[in-house]
Image (tube, rainbow, N blue to C red; front, side, top):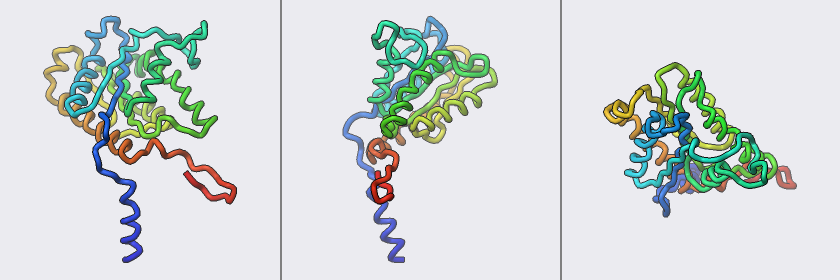
Length: 231
């Protein structure tokens, strides 16, 4: 019994409950294919999530993928050796507490703009391999998937694999799917609004726990000269 009490007591340091000093910050990357993004269902659901997170005391920025200039591929610089809009997004991802990718279902998968972001994010994987430092530890990931066709489960699976492999943390119900095909229907859908609230709440709560308990400082165990592991 004494041993059990000591174990419980020793775990308390890992579960701090104080509020973070600075506001939690989330980035929503909207991968709509529509040039007029105001007509995009993905964007309009993203607006609901942004509003909900802000009402919960968080900061939330939406970036429209087709409004930034970038070259496809995995390089951080363009052909002239300059950074582009996608490089700036990677910098924001590193600074923020959570990343949410909003995408339509396009031929059963996410859009090419979502794929472009995932390809460029190999940068974080390269750092992990070379330096054994994961810069995405302590960050949450979520997805907004819009469309009236089958495919959202496949997209959820692909995104989940991508996110957890890179080091993100997925809260419960980390993906929000919506079949509404107009801005007005999105605004009037009470069930969607309820799910938006749950989605935002879970993102906030887990980002808060990760930051407060300094999970970003936890890195892969290394071997010292004695063969024992340390962090």
